[in-house]
Length: 472
Ligand code: ADP
Ligand code: ZN
Image 1 (cartoon, rainbow, N blue to C red):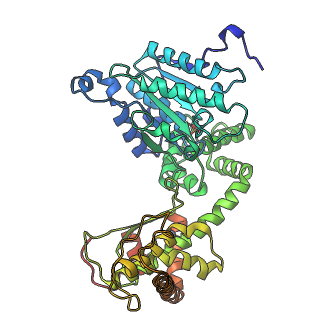
Image 2: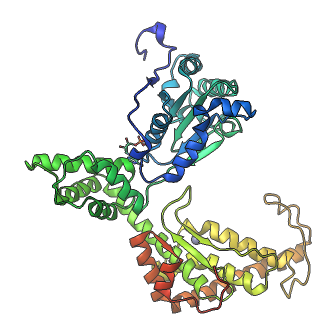
Image 3: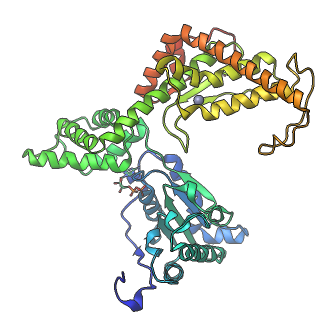
């Protein structure tokens, strides 16, 4: 379908905001780290000479990834507002046209526009539409898409130290992008925006409550905390939706101002709209909380395990949750330490089994690490009686099967011993978590409520760790 005048079809439909961008960082809440990273990146737009005089290669682009509605577009625009440069935005899908050659022509046109207003920030939303890994698609337009992507790479490679354009790209499918896009000198920085945690949600509510007319008796801070607690898993866009809905409800009820109840009704309405997602979300969240609590409690009560200092069920990057340990600067490990570490790794899977009598895919990474550690003890550290005090350098992953440095019978023995070491760790952990069932439950419930627990929280829940440990 031909849109508009055929003579202008090769022009990019990018929107340019030249000046008076009204959005600032204070309008983007709950992502301080991302703001810092992005400011570092665009700093040179404000001081180009300083960078050029030093001979620095200036950055060209960054990828903003994360689920829809987490503020990628908002952050890009606010950045332009902060450094006071024009903001050009375009959607990746606008380059996919049925006519051969139109995509690349629009890319060229886009960069001509950008150069003419530089210094500026160019935002390409949904870059995956053009940035899909080459040779992966099966649609008719594939070669056109590849030509468009190639043109984009050519344009970015053509930047020099005086180009003064930063290209930001938004996507929620960073996993399908062509690796060439991420090479140095292209989108070589990666900034992730995830769903906000409890504190983040409260601060986003605060931003969106600012323009609303509330009853003077409403305590805004308390209201924001209350609403944040009601909205686990909500993105910034959904929070904006709640705030607007509350105003609509107040108007419908002929109120002069908005009260707490209006907000609560609005939350219910938005949850209703995304009910399926929320249900799944809560169930998953519970599983993740018990999984993490399993790691924490196992480590807490095993003498040689590494001290844990932070536990979280807020998704970060591509992982559903995290636990952070303080690994000592240490080069020699005893068998006891390695065994306790294996048990702690297995604690997540074991807890899921103890509490839900079913297992999920969430433990894959834990199992991989525990398996690696078991193998290392047996074939590298010489810690197994049956296999003996031997050490083999294991070939890198992938060709382990065809390049084993030992014979078939040794291989069988090793596999058996690895298996029984993991079984032993598993049974010990299982016994421990059955004994400490209530502890796991306490930690999991607290995690569901607070989402993040630090060391002091754990001491409150579990009591001090029953072993002497080096001060943290
Ligand atoms: P994305 O580009 O990641 O899909 P947007 O930037 O388009 O998300 O967000 C849509 C709207 O949601 C924004 O215009 C804003 O009103 C709200 N929003 C999203 N994230 C935030 C945030 N961190 N702080 C304040 N508002 C936000
Ligand atoms: Zn785990």
